[in-house]
Amino acid sequence: MKARLMIKVRRPVAENAFAEIVVWMLPRPLPGSAHEFKFRLVYVVDGDCVLRYDNETGKGDHKHIGGIETFYSFTTPEKLLADFWRDVANWRL
Image (cartoon, rainbow, N blue to C red; front, side):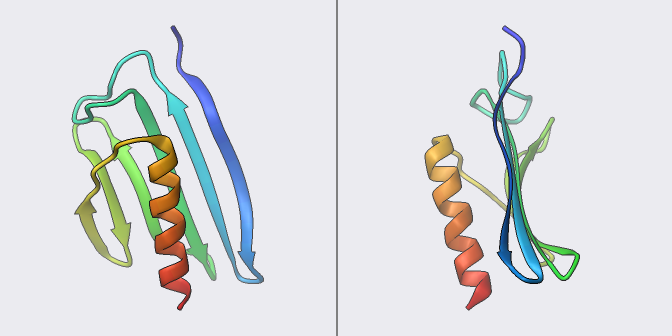
């Protein structure tokens, strides 16, 4: 099986902000991840990425909020999206 694009969307959130979501299903997990998904979810405000969820080969699943990087416990793509949109809403408060 080849990598399969599951989601690729860019959504305006405000006049000066947008969210971009890209999720792939892979034939096998990336080193550092225990699941078969590659993801990048970003929230950009005034041209700056202020929130990002991603996983990198060897680094595993994590998120960046402002300048702080923390571990992210991936369970399902649906939960990933819910967590991301919750953090976007919190950032906008």
